[in-house]
Structures are given as structure tokens and as C-alpha cells.
Image 1 (cartoon, one colour):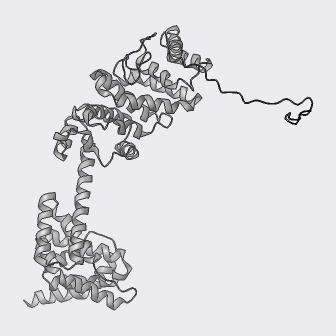
Image 2 (cartoon, rainbow, N blue to C red):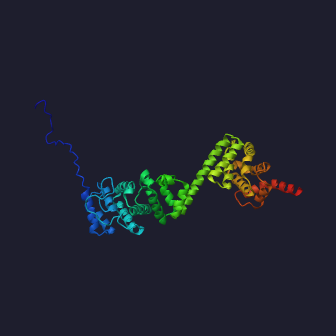
Image 3 (cartoon, rainbow, N blue to C red):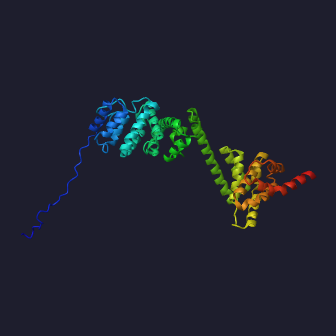
Amino acid sequence: MSSKERPTLGGTRIKTRKRNIAAPLDPAAFADAVVQIYLDNAGDLELIAKCIESSDLNFSRYGDTFFEVVFTGGRTQPGTTKPDEGERHPYSVLESEATREVILPSVIYIQKILRRRPFLIKNLENVMRRFLQSLELFEENERKKLAIFTALAFSQKLSGLPPETVFQPMLKDNLVGKGLVLSFITDFFKEYLIDNSLDDLISILKRGKVEDNLLEFFPSTKRSDESFSEHFTKEGLVALVEYNEKKIFEVKLKEMKSALTTQITEETDMSEVIETVKQRVKDAKLPDVEVVRILWDVIMDAVQWSGKNQQQNANAALRQVKTWAELLNTFCTNGKLELELIYKVQMQCYEDAKLMKLFPEIVRSLYDQDVLAEDTILHWFRRGTNPKGRQTFVKALEPFVNWLEEAEEEE
């Protein structure tokens, strides 16, 4: 045996690596086959679903093509929504009537297909994303059908279709600027809220990461809270308008509280703090009651508490009340607001153990600083409506009330 020859064991087969030979792509033949199933069954989705389930078509390779056939009746040209060559059928989503009754069977049909072939959900996402990014290529009536389909898909909880697949692709400047996105999303909201609550809709918007940016659906020239309210009120979506107004209100409250917290913590000059509150109230149109509540929260949040030392806590709280009494007095301008302030003090003392015994002292301090009037204190004592800790606080305040009544009789 030559030294260059390699020894081998008799009868042993030497394995060689086989190349992976890919079958040629043929989406046209696949699309024609699916179209033929539609035609053979005259658009009966029950029968079509059964034929699809029993077929040996390569859905894993041509999933996108399958949903193109479902939505448009045949293949679409690459990168567009225009029909490609090949067979077509007249039973597609976009060929149907723009009503929930007609489109709902298509949603249920797709649901059945996805249950048997869950891997197709990615293909559905791909096609939905492509269509929604190309809304301008559809006719107005076709866009409405897509909106109805999308709303029904979420109502039926279509096999995990993620909201971000729907909302994010539409937020392209050219689509938003033409008003196409606003029109689509309005149809979507109206259709979805037929069967679902506003909370359900908000949940979807949160998952789609657009709940805090609803104005982005509006063209830049109409991107204002007033336009939002006007548009959706006109479309009959008053609950959505009220939700948005509440959200705006909460944001403004939070911003005002943050600004005041900084000023009070830094012991900013009283006149500057008062001016800040006035400006915030004017800009945000905040109700007087909310202003009083915020002021008390911010003032007490800035107190430097000293753990379990009750006397030090009492001194710190009363010192804070005295320091910022002028701020409270500026905005507690009538008996109703004064009473609201007492209720606010009552709730905080009820909820915070270290303040429980301070209620009468705080009320007395607010009286001494002319923030609370005698009549307001007596009204709360005799006819207060908040039950939280009321019996305890009434008993604790009784000596001070007796003193007020005696002083009144002497006068």
C-alpha cells in the first residue's frame, strides 16, 4: 500500500455532505390554487376553511401570499397593493360590503385558519402592516373595510394580533398629513366600541403604545386638544372625548404639583409662589377645589418628618402651616373652599398615623392664621359629611369648638 493512500475499513461507507437544494419559489401557482378553492366553493367560507385545512399547499412558505388572496382576491405586486397577474376571486374582504355583518365571517374564518396553522400569525402581521403603511393606495371605501376588519379582529381577539402591528405602521407623516390615519382610526374606534367598553379600547391603545399620543393621529395643523374634542364629539365618541379631557386634566394637575413642590421645598418667595399658582390655574382652567387640594398636599409633603417623635412632627407640621398660611388664604376665598380644606386635613390625618392626633391643632392653627373662618369650623363640626375618622376628630375638636361658641356668646 502506498504511503500516500489512506487506510479504510472494509465495508464502511464514507458519508458526503449533501447540499440543501431549495425548491424554486412559485407564489403565483400557490395563489392560483387558493383562488381556485374560493371559486370552487362559491365563496362559502365554511367550505373553503375545510378545503384549506385538508390541502397540502405550502402555507409556511407562502403565508403572505395567502393573506393577499384573502384580503384582495389574488396576489398583489411586490411592495404595493396593486393586483398582480393570475387568477382572482370576488369574495375577498375588500370586495365585500363595508358592514360588520358581512366582514365578521371573514374574521372568524381567519381565526379558524390560524388555530390550525398558528405560524401564519406572522404572515397576517406582515400583510396588515404593509396595507396600513399604504393606506393612500386604497379607495376610501376600502380603507373603511380595513378599519372594520381590524376592529372586529380585536373584538374577536384574533389569535394574538398585536396592537402595535396596527397602530405604529400608520404613523407616517404623509398618511397622517392627508387625514387618512384620522379617518381610519375614527372608523376603527366607532366599530370597536359597538361590542367593547372604553376601558377595553384604552387597553388596546396602551398595548399599541399610542394611548399617550392620540393627537399624533391628527394632521399637524389640527393637533390640539380642541380639535380632538371637536372631531370625536362630532363622530359621536363623547366617552373618548371625556376620557381625553380627564387625562389632560390629570397631567396639568401633576405638572402644577411638581412645580409647586419645587418652589416650596426651595422656600421660594411667597409672592412668586402665589403668582405661579395663579398662572397655572389660568392656563389649565383648574377648578378652585382642586387647587386647594393640591396646595395642602404640596405643603404637607414638604414637611421634614422626624420618625416616631410625635412632638417634633407636630411642631414641624404646625410650623409649615404657619409658614404657608398666606398661600392657602389667597385661594381659600369662600366657605365652600374652606370646608374643602378641612375635609382634606381630615383625610390626611385619618390616613397618616403620625398626624392622627394633630387634627385639632392644625384646625386651630388655620383659624389663627385666618385661613379658616369660625362659621366653617362650626359647620364641619355640626354637619360634616365625610365619615372617615369623624367621630374621633369631632371629639378631639370639641374643646376648641366650645371655646369658639363661648367667645361668640360673649360678643
